[in-house]
Length: 334
Ligand code: NDP
Image: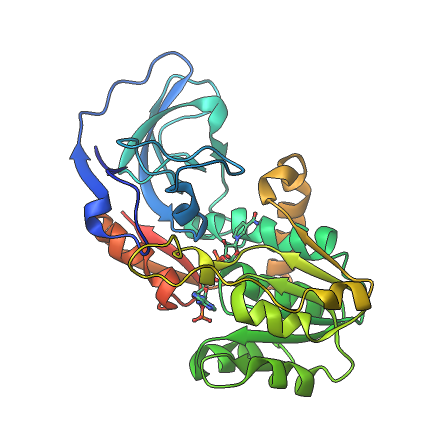
């Protein structure tokens, strides 16, 4: 059993030296426990935040602890009545090749319905984030105008498609022509803005002349400001993430975190800006996952996984999220 442990807290973009690759013998399963061979590890932007010290919505990963991560795998053997060898499971299992877990922490998944990596994407945490962020926090109504950033990514691509299902006018922001073409041509967004080559505030004005009802923010920074400048009366700004800011820890990458300038637009437009954490909706995941699975089988929701093979590449593969080199839900194949 091999694992990546957090060796020190990264300063800016994580580096290989921030982790220690260790090897241990996998213990036998005790009563109520299950041994799992991990097949796929979910690489999420939030992992960068979990590496920082200090108070957050979840406790930081400790130094020398196995790096926290969602994962999916196959049961090797089990001393829990609900699991047997060969079952496919998903859970928070960490960046490691094998693990022993209490059965009650594992969720059995049906690979007849969808392939295993999809349970780390559209039918997993990012899917739940898109579902509750859009429908609950964004309180999206039929026919509204919606803007979403990181629009070709795990969460953003689903947000846009859920909004299209509700007959909304949907505009996505993504980096580069390939991703922009994808969200329009494959996913059915009404328009795309290439933030690497266009002035975002101007483009939002052009594509949404009457302003935005919902801005679903995955990136923060100047793009958030451009959206704030284009709100309409009663708009909702959903703060899902701010990936452009995650590595701004005052280290060598640094420039300081970007502070939005256009927040007075919230006052003028009687708008609200609200952050959320998907884990707060855990009790309602089963219903949401059922809806998402139905929408996928009906062809209303497309999902895309970007699977990188090689456990040892973990630090470099994780950083694809911050350079935009991932295209779809980023998954590490063990
Ligand atoms: P993605 O699959 O969208 O991958 C990240 C993408 O972010 C990259 O591909 C890149 O796309 C874009 N990006 C990276 N850096 C920048 C930048 N400086 N400016 C603009 N875009 C950038 O990741 P996820 O879908 O997993 O996550 C999306 C967001 O949702 C993150 O902020 C994450 O933290 C958040 N999140 C929040 C949750 C919650 O409970 N609140 C739960 C899950 C995710 P491009 O090539 O287009 O630049």
